[in-house]
Length: 110
Image 1 (cartoon, rainbow, N blue to C red):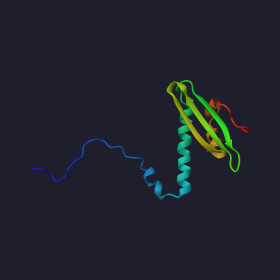
Image 2 (cartoon, helix red, strand yellow):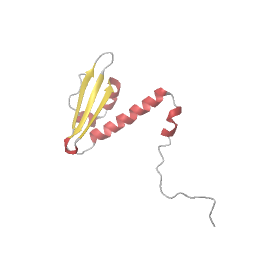
Image 3 (tube, rainbow, N blue to C red):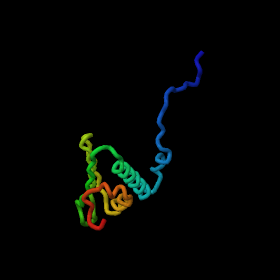
């Protein structure tokens, strides 16, 4: 006799429950959360000890708004990450001493 209830076997990853409702938030709040996630990811990657790593910052635009290019390169892994940040996001990223120590080419004023 077959049961009318069918069970699905296996494990399923459930996405972050807090992220599931992001669509209902104000766009400014969603943007701020996204910036925080990006900065957290950059901090973790910059401070991780994963071989010879080069981290460079260059200003690529000054008007109408300052924009900086952050490059993380790990030659042994053939890896390069490029992220564009405004002045506020860059300053927030550089608040951590360990991040500042590993960055070459800091823009003036930092």
